[in-house]
Amino acid sequence: MNRLRALAAAPFVLALAAHLLLLALWRDRLPDPLATHFSATDGGRADGFTGLAAYTAISSGLLLLLGAGWVAFVRRSALCGAWATAGFTGGLLDLLLRDNLDAADAAEVSTPLAVFTVAAGIGALAGLIGWGLTRLPRLVPPEPVVPVPPVRAPRLDLGAHELAGWSRAATSTAGTAFGTVFVVAGAGALFPAVLVTPWPYALIAAVGLVIGVPGVALSRVRVGVDRRGLTVTPALLPRPRIRIPLDEVASATVHDVRAVAEFGGWGYRTRPRRSALLLRSGEALSVRRTNGFEFLVTVADAETAAALLNTLAARDSGGGSAVAAPGERI
Image 1 (cartoon, one colour):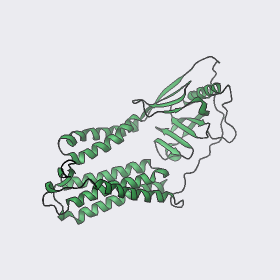
Image 2 (cartoon, helix red, strand yellow):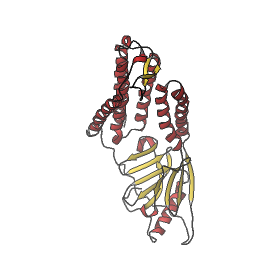
Image 3 (cartoon, helix red, strand yellow):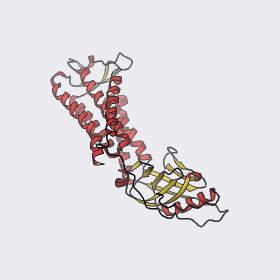
Image 4 (tube, helix red, strand yellow):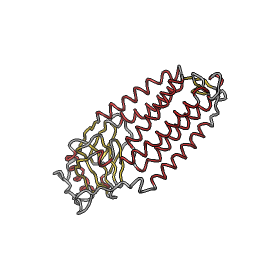
């Protein structure tokens, strides 16, 4: 995992180093302030400006922020995404410097909208490099499947005609705080982005809201078990929703999950034949599906949820056993 995180951080370090090098080499050839926003309806002429020092701080901070996000949540299958993000962002920032080069007045700077196509090409090339790294097992070893000893699935004593349901909210305090910081930063940047200086505030607003709103939404979820099966829904939004119907439930039990050791972090995570929504480490409801895959969600009183889910699944299948077979991972 440490090697994977280093490979996810590498493109952002390279992009930041290249950007700072260009700033140093071109320092005397760049106007101050820089043209940093361009009109889409006026031939790409500059209509927003940022001081050189502020631009340096913001562009560097953006690359560091994106890099930190990818390092915190990266997995092997998403390594190419980290490289593509670094390539596109770093390329766009460097192309902006090139457009300002040798300009006597930043107001006279213009840029073709094709610059985004060029940046996208750089990002695609970087993404291919990241994808290529995942093809080298010695450099990025495959994520191992962690064996879990078989356990007996709990059952709830429920009459043949009795109805029952179970629901519990699960909250991540750290996730709420983290997401709120991004939402506040993004919302705070909207006013100057619209009325004062579009760039870089529009970029800050976009990054803050794109990261913050899902972060806040997924920091509190409601887990429910009833005749429809297992449902996991964000407490503040109706979507995205995770649902496992009863006819797809092989068995359910309680698992003491270690978020970092088993899945590399918190949030929605995937591993070979496993997926999880982890708001913390500790007690989690583990559902073994009929296709052999496992889903986990951290929630209190998971034993009651597992027992009810096993009972309802057995009733739905005509009374079949909800006991795990020998060697089955739950």
